[in-house]
Picture (tube, one colour):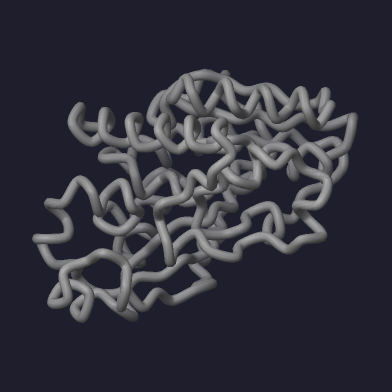
Length: 254
């Protein structure tokens, strides 16, 4: 991740964590982050975990998690998907959350303590350098974070490395169909807002394949219309309908 993008991402998400600690909603990424979780899922979670949700999907609802599995959430933020995963894998399983932002890690650990969940561990680090050994986890999830990295190929190679043979990659992310204008690509603000850094669907598939993954599938879950999203009207018209939230599945060969 280049330093300017990395610093901007850290500042953005540290600010979101501080907002949540003040009782506000941390999300500034609409329409990407609206209405992703059902009330039945969030009813047992700390308010801080729900307010800090900054994702573009709900990977825990789509990932086929089983009792006793080890799950890793790349860019875990306030911890909502880690806590939901911990419930799914049960006491014999474990859920790791990885984040590079101190304020988000502090919020996530506070949410864990409030929830009283024991089978969770939050790690500090970057998704380009996962601080776990090879073949350590059964499932990798992520929620609108991989698009923020400036070195997505390295992220996917690291994901492949830490997955056990037969392990599953099951992430929600923002992808594009067709080219995104350079004016959007150059905008750090839009990068942090989950748009500028989004991969084209075919490129996402290619990078997964290059990393060693098989069984690759990209399933659109929500197509975005940027009619009132603080984007220049001309750019909004160019990207509306071509940017989407998607569930991306792949697996490491057994």
